[in-house]
Image (cartoon, rainbow, N blue to C red; front, top):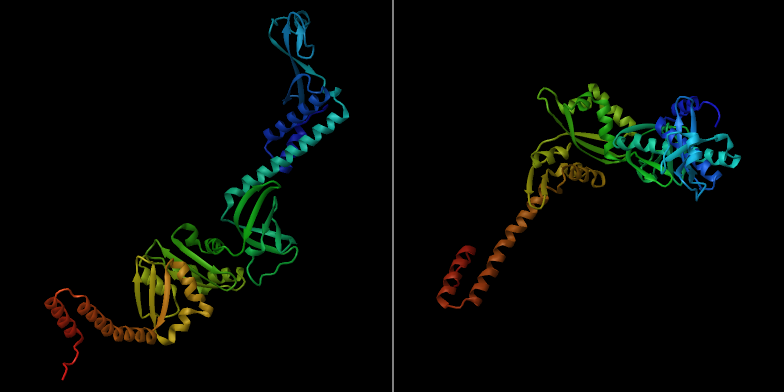
Length: 392
């Protein structure tokens, strides 16, 4: 323990990014642990770091008494006054011990405690740094594969890009650079765990925020984003400035802005849709480039029936239902798409079934009527409705 520790502490603080107070506390704990091991926990000891001389000093505290019973924790009044002339009975007297008297094993214990404290402080520092960065995009270097998962080096920490969070048809090799979205940060037994994602809709939103100044400044707001990673995505945008076109701002000059996002997502097709509070209009925009003829809304069931021209049906549905599936996710409503021909056929079927239903109601009235005159009146009304021809 001989020598000035201030220089060593400053160097560790600089290299490891650990708080100075945390490191000093680790040193004090380490020296105290070594001292307790040396004296087998028989004495009342405290360790304090002396900033002026750069050393950790260990003090033994004993109680001043008339007659000593426990020599490890008590001291005679006369002997105590040789150290401090003003001491009185029942006072606690602290005497500094020689740190050099600690054995080699005690010094090794101190070293282990310091290493452990430094490691814990590093883990805590990494967790505190990244826990508030959830939702950000980070750049990293691929280090290795572990059972399909990617281990990505972020500089101060390693992050995990699980196989389920990797976009289809994206392949990486060791030392490749990867850009990913921080979806979760949690503390585990092995330290902080940073989970990355290349499939999260937040990645799309963050990429547009970095590429489009109007989005970063809040002039254009992204109301929602949905993806089928590696294939297609839709985002809904709205402008808070009447002079700014939200779709045009996101597309950029000659499509430069949206093209940068498409390139980062390895060719994922992106539809940019103007947001509107009217669900019907929003649904029509979300199904673009397909044209819509009519929209029937069920507010209670949060469902829509959308009629499109026959030649637009396949375009509205999309490949394997992709277009309508993404549109439904974006607006948050259930969508049922029908062609004009199919809608007309259903309307005709309903019209044909209507007279049959009325005939059934007429029969029920006749059979269940309790009074003949009332039953006959109701029968006449029903017959008038269906306009059956009179019998010969």
